[in-house]
Image (cartoon, rainbow, N blue to C red; front, side):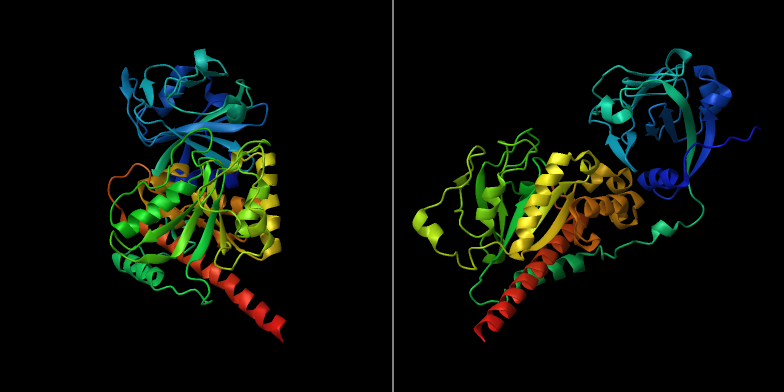
Length: 448
């Protein structure tokens, strides 16, 4: 059998394997060797089990898709919830999952296809055809630079590796146990802020529209209520559903006492000026001047009561920890304008010495391996690369980036979700204490 040479670099191969778990890739088909004809593809790839297609174009884009269901020329529609498309955008592959309720492909004698939408080796030519269907949501400009001419097309057989991968050793340790959940809940219940003048830690959530700020509050509230709740408006609208500044205390159960923290929700950030949350508004919030339920005006920053604004807010009214909420599926797509907006906010927060954390949401949507089992989170090479990318883009240490999955469509609480969410909340309280400790030290030295 002729020996095939893969066009994939070792780095890109490892990153693609990171989306799939501990797997081996074996090159079955290379169009430049066997031809772009559908018959050549099927001769090499039919009934080979799960496969990964990797395409290249002359514009330098690398993209493709995965299917867990054999090619068999059955003439049937194929359902495959594990199928996904990917595109390398920069150094990191972006994973695009199939939309709910759609078929993964039509299993015919033609070239490889995904979702009756994307056809490779179309009409036996070195080309890709995008029919523009709705099984996958993506932009052709970001997928392949609108260049449908293929310079190469490879198909790999995907098999579970017989060797233990070094990435199987978690890069962070988490105890996925009910006992750990109870320990975290007890620590949070019993948390006492360092300063007697502060009864509750105030945590400000900042992030782009749809990243999951409101969903994080709903998720934390659900855990302590013992059932799903939806107190804060959340969803997937193109513009922010949150139009007011909201402060959300959380009760320890329906009749329980208030817990020692308040989650503060804001209007979502948008890249264009005159839309979304204004940076001046954030400054007013940080310094404790904006009241609960104040309605934001994207065209004009907050104008508080002059008498109140003239006096410094108490430490109790100020923000003690800022949490940037970032969607893991959109990190590589973050615009320069939005990145600069976040950098401006970080400079302001830094100047006030306030603690900062990044909450990376939707990890299950970003990585199929994690979607299968949330406990794979810290064994995922792909998620690790996303954490590193967030760290680099926002200028925060890797240790300050916390991946989580908010509750969105679940009807019941799930232990793994709870452990991640509570771990993140506990870290926010710890960071806020560092800020308060610094304030105590500063006040003592200032009094000398």
